Length: 209
Image 1 (spheres, one colour):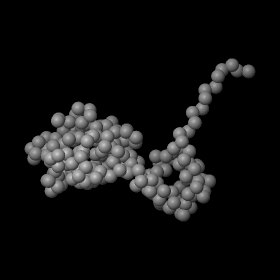
Image 2 (cartoon, rainbow, N blue to C red; image 1 turned 45 degrees about the horizontal axis):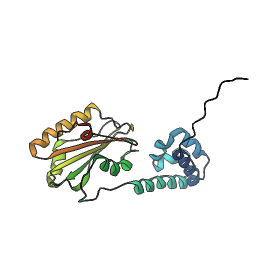
Image 3 (cartoon, rainbow, N blue to C red; image 1 turned 60 degrees about the vertical axis):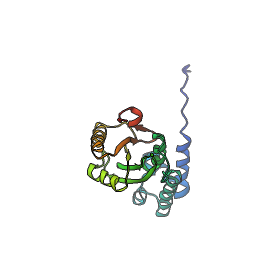
Image 4 (cartoon, helix red, strand yellow; image 1 turned 45 degrees about the vertical axis):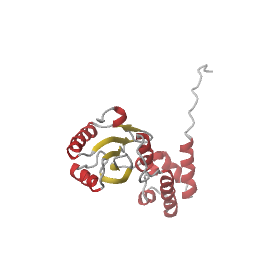
């Protein structure tokens, strides 16, 4: 008999178990467990209706599944209220995390602020691919001028789930800061959203304050 102590198995996270049960509940199809095993939480939550049916779920179950995740995202999403003060990078992350964390492509959002750092408006500037989204300084500052913004918070996601800024992210921020100085509209932060975390250029000291 072996005297070696067997390493205890780590139980699956509660979130995993809940999603697996949800799959079977809404689909009425035991193949849902196999679907979960192949894609995991991140993949399941981003399935479209067509993709869910193609994976073997019955149409009714696929509709319920996609609808359940969409409802969960809307309930978890925290909107930035017009007129609310910009107080921290974490505040912006909480507002954008749920809407961006599971996307398979990048989106760039802008939060326009007034002279007292109050939110004027949030707007999606661009939507791109797995590795980037096009950002044109002319369009960005045209929108900011139209909104009479004094400063801007940039927000974009990394579909990989890793929020660490790329060299392109850093270069883009420096270029936008330079243009902003010329037109009198300051970039106050650039927040990169990942799956469960974020990186703030302001908190890193990469933004000139």
